[in-house]
Image (tube, rainbow, N blue to C red):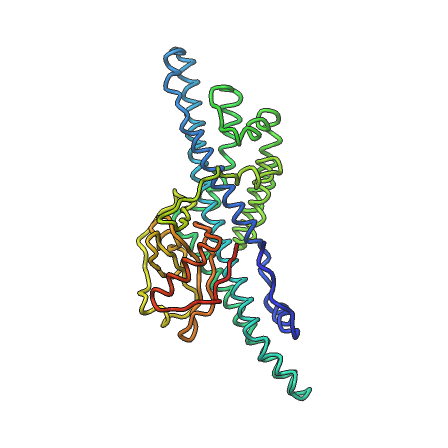
Length: 382
């Protein structure tokens, strides 16, 4: 369920919203879309590994060699497309995380100031309006700062040498390459995995119309929005179109399906696996347990398989998998520190998605071990 807007009590949020707006993207759908791209990328990578080594043995003449070369080019294109889909998934997951942080931050900011704003209603009419206008303007400035900071992180996350537009072109290009080089000249040689059979069928039945729809409905709006600086809208609008078109309108349910994996346990403790094993894991910059309460803002945490609490800033280059070094965890999420106190704890972690009483118990125990009581502060995000 997407994060709802703040309470409209006392008319505070409607007045602030008129000056700031509310982030429209659905962060839950964006995570699902990212999972769809990631799963689709894995399938294309699998298709790219198809072995055509035996072809020369039963078709040794020049025509066979030419045929093998074209088939190999198609498989290479599938591999590149798989890599591009993974890039799109990473971007979308990161974007969804930023949307979550902004929405959560706005809600907490508004709710923390409701009581104070309510007292302004006791002032005389002339003074009341003047004070309320100043109050609303101040909060609007803080909300806009939250949005601006998130936009900066989203922009920074794209400066790693991989161009998103080129990734999307690669993805679109592999479909065209498959139609021209596999399904027209090598039909039956390369067998795509079961959950892209619908793509194969549509390519065979109407490749021209299919590619035209994909390109118009996905690539063009994404490129246009990206060039105009609307990265969020590009991802949010363009990827929906792309996945719906590619998977016949059932992209999320079809491409985001993962095989069920039994939940591992260690000494009776439930462990949550990293759901994106191919993601790069970097050395983590952590915060010493003795310095946690001197921090300010949102921090990320994991509780390792051994029950140890690891804390660090979540940035465009550091996430929960870095704090855990990709290992299974008992719990993971975010918490806020202000004025030397922990103000709220949750289980928001796209890589681990911990849930249930076991995650909450592990979180509370991890903080208790370093002398921080978070009783009553934990709120499950899913």
